[in-house]
Length: 108
Image (tube, rainbow, N blue to C red; front, top):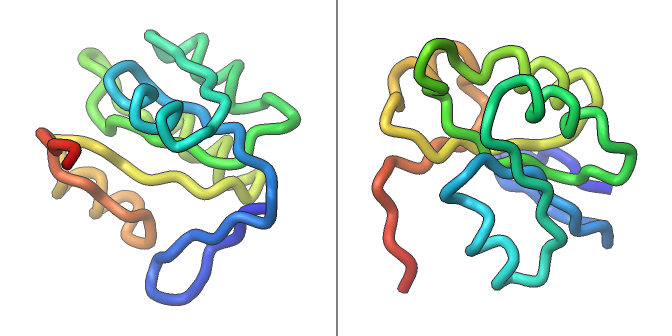
């Protein structure tokens, strides 16, 4: 099981099935995770209920809305998530314990 640890780090105890919004899942696949991808809020909310889900990578800004509803589902299930977003202030203000990676980020 994934757990939140001091200083915002995340550790895995074995499961590696992650949920990601578009633009984030290729790096997770490269790291060996099975990735569930969603391109819109409704699908993302459904995937947040997936029984074997162990982590999430979210963009805070979802055009006409934000990912707050997804965050609450993951939080309620004790599934850790990180933001990869250009909306750093908004993400940090609403979810100060969640790690935030500023867009764009390059592999390498």
